[in-house]
Image 1 (cartoon, rainbow, N blue to C red):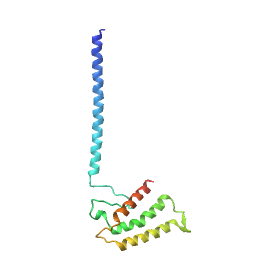
Image 2 (cartoon, helix red, strand yellow):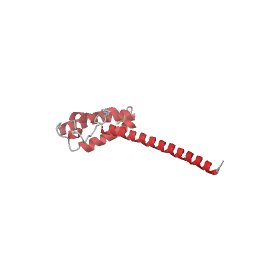
Image 3 (cartoon, rainbow, N blue to C red):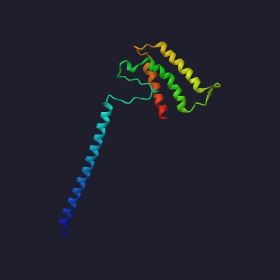
Length: 144
């Protein structure tokens, strides 16, 4: 066997290996592109999943940032109580009073304050910071 014929055979094998490697890389890139396109479609799709009722949503794209007086007032009754149950504090007491009862009363008082200090047609000044934090903490509660 001559060196020249062996060199030609090796070079053809190297070319075939390079071609296979390029094909694999192209397939990988095509798959990544497809995944990115699917993700972009999901992100730009106007139909979004609804979060649980215990998570208030401040949506900057909606009129009044998604303010709904009754729903957002109700969040302050539901969220603290849901946190008590999610954290497993149902059997705990605060000054000899069951924790769920104490949290419910506090939540109802905050709800009453929200109902008295806000209107349906205009979101209150505390809406964005307070409800964004409440939504963040409740999301953590659900993950935890």
